[in-house]
Image (cartoon, rainbow, N blue to C red; front, side, top):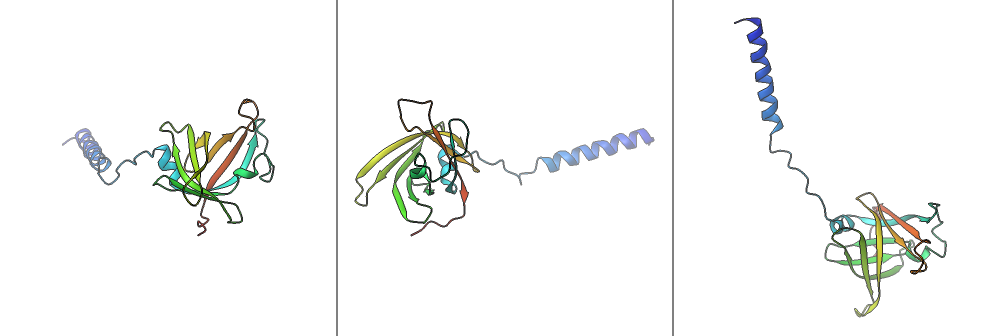
Length: 158
């Protein structure tokens, strides 16, 4: 056998081995999460707010303070929210549109009566960030605040 044939044969063997290993079933592709699954996958903490100019807004600012806290969106479509001092804020039902562009919460009292419904535009929804936009005056979309949440390991208060 000539050296050329040995080299070609060796390359064919290496190529076939690479194909065999590369086609292994050990690495199933990860299923992409729906927007609702992403939101329910972690607990969220408000960590920042930005105004329509992109400037940071302190979380105690009157324009954003009501939106600050810990949020727990459960896969069954219910949520609970707490202030940063762990005092209860609200609970109820939630949904995210299939396209991931809006989130709706329906806040309820302890008897299950609806207190209010709020629909917000989602600007970022990943496993690392959940940001939605609020408008102090719904008739003026030029003034807004983006409420930024990041995942937290904070255990939901009981």
